Figure 1 (tube, rainbow, N blue to C red):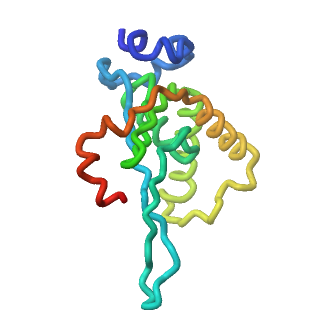
Figure 2 (spheres, rainbow, N blue to C red; figure 1 turned 45 degrees about the vertical axis):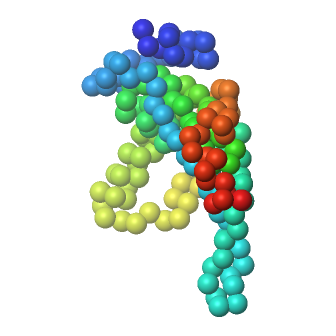
Length: 178
């Protein structure tokens, strides 16, 4: 079974997640993990030049050392859509290799995401209305959801890094990077 092979060591509790099967309808039973690769941009905007054009600095930024909170919904939606019990978040840096983080599916979080998307659809999109900025900021249940998002981000477990030497062709790219 894929869950036991791929994720039991990292997330033994995933096999016992209540309601997990409810979201597997129509998913491919061979799906073991969802994978998301994000590149760390080495460019940062600097002060505009005298001509008024934007200038950029080249910084050799390392990969993320944890899953950024803003990527949690995307990872959880990937798992919801595919039925995967785990997602791998890979943060790639051309100069420093790649960090890899494993995140378990959180059924309760996924259900909450669907409720918020449904509310947005019902209250605004379907009616052709533009939602106000920070549409739910004054709601306690929304702040609870945001705290849940942070907990899910912190729950990701870091795997051994892929060193920069693994990245094929990097040696030929040093002139660009340095």
